[in-house]
Image (cartoon, rainbow, N blue to C red; front, side, top):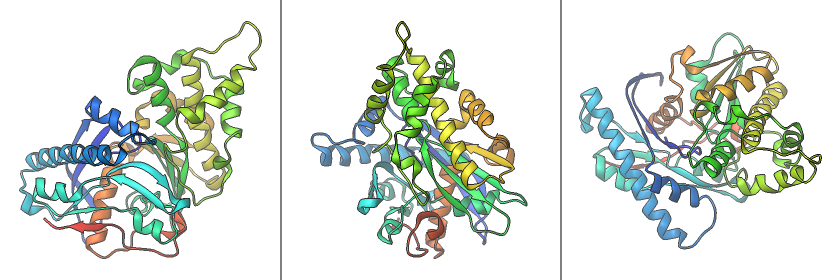
Length: 364
């Protein structure tokens, strides 16, 4: 899995029982090479020679996928012939379900050639073709491993934040809530040349500006849409931030200013506020929120979330699944579901016309 945070790739090697319950056998992660990250980031917006650059970036991405597959095989002391499939999500660079498409850069045929293992990929397009959002796809998987006897919410903090609501005896619900790391990472890189704010320490030097926070919360119609809904860097990026920031800067009292750290702290509070608002609206009975994804490692964000929520906020580690394993494990499960004919798409989550078997296979 390489998500919208654009920080790198996580891989897990898992064994599934007959009911689709996983056991993690090995794991590997790798940050993106700076040049690849820069290219992938640039491909989130229109630019010159996109077709060629996208194809070459997909090949480079898959080379990294293959490297991590090899690492997990060495750890597990298994051969490629013992693996039934690789679930490979690809890198989302456009997500416009309202226009009938979502685009993940990937080269599954090349991955099958490099690894000698069957590849299941292109998970989102069938749900979009059926009128759905194509995202989030993980709530059904979350229900299988995190359901309990009380209402629990899984909050994934990648580039974009999404929640899964798990109630006893009910179908899972889920949707994107807004940006998680996307705005914070971009702002941090702009001002520090670092790809992300480690543990939220840089932003913690600043103070939340309430006027800017209110503007971010109130000046975006997408945030007020009911689910099903999903989003991406197509919407939440620095171009989105700029006019809202300028609006507030133009209304500062004479002699006052905002530091870059103040803005970072406000973006952190914005992520927490939008996620908390979604949980308060659609899961007011939640007893616990489990965090996963890269943002779960940001102590400043965890603090903001706990302050905004009345329930316990912890990580998926407390439920036996590592925060960096959840998304990769979910797409391993989606590959398992594809191979077993399980309709993993949930129309109550995505808004599709019905449940669909997701993905396509490139044989070994």
